[in-house]
Figure 1 (tube, rainbow, N blue to C red):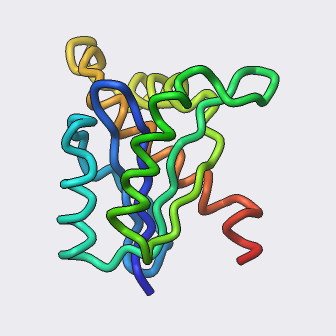
Figure 2: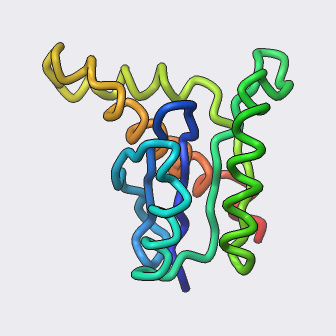
Length: 141
């Protein structure tokens, strides 16, 4: 069984998280520049088996896709072309940035460290992946 990788996709950078091989625990992996995302994911999938990629789906409070989907969709479509055997799906990411900031505060992270947006992106990707692992979408597979 391969890992599940998650992406918190942003215009400038993407947070990346991954499960352990048994798909029990989600852990933040890194943050990469969006322009380097495809190369990074391909290289990672070459080193570690990845069966599925979960991408955060930004939605409005009404549950509709947000405007940022106009730059996310083309990037994910390129990733699908580069990794044709890997399932790539979207999963609701509402409030993950807020939860990431709360986790940083609760964890006692210093103010200067909390300003590092790459840490927020990585934590957000981890929250997306944890939420996915606990969801009916994953558990009904």
